[in-house]
Image (cartoon, rainbow, N blue to C red):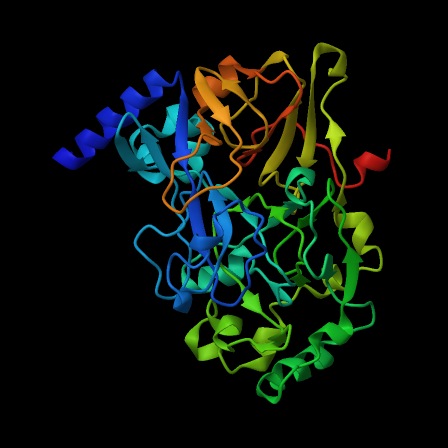
Length: 412
């Protein structure tokens, strides 16, 4: 082991002990050159183009991420979260590599040798173009992994809904493969008309969706909390959005080079039965489900992202609300990334506070990574406000829970 690795191991162990198994993370900002920021991430207006106008506006904040952002012209470590404490700084990826079983749990470490998930806020003024994320089998062709994802629209961050609070999902039943193939063939002729075959659903704060790989979706303009697999693969199927052309390279960036002009291959990235499901909403729409009847004890914990992908529990997320002046101890079966969306108080021995404005590069007190050791022992949440709830979102890795609700269980 070299001296750098020894130093990282020592720092990680010391920070874990100092935080009793909880690490404080700094904000991780990610720009997208093809989107317009919705200005609800609390990033100061002066810093929306902190990476330079050529990189696009910052419209994403990633949480507890060990996954690099696959942007062109990206900066070093773009997308990676940093642990910051006591004047020291290292990536969460380095910390996990140093103390994997303690941080992410023995089961996840032995199977994946990393923290294989992450979450983000994405915040766009308008809609994102209709696109999909490849399956494991498809992504493996370019040395990557597939990406399922989940959505939740936090009420605290959606006081304004942008200019298109609707999301297109899938394809209308009866849409043919030939119609989609023809749309891809019209890429350089203006609007290729892919949305002619899609259906939009109105978005509502406090609800969400579960989106497996190979499902076409054009997310709307609500700020979205998005737990997902640790990959950044995609294929854009829409050639223009909001009157702006979409580079064809975004259709093919995660496709083998020899297939870039193979319309049959590109069309077959789509899961046809899943996209043309006549009961699409029934099979993908989520509403919060309380974990237990605990409101009389001063808190309520809710499932907000749940369900399985091809029978596997890939990720999940909960929203915990602690009432003014209350405290509770929560025991979870696995590690999690956490962000505060309202209020202030203490989590474990670390003070937390939801910021109002954040400057680029500024340290905050609203994001943590709670290790497997701390989560399974139990973490105490304290609300220090006499008037406002303390609200946090936390997301978990694969196969952590003995069971999770299934899509549709909120209606039962």
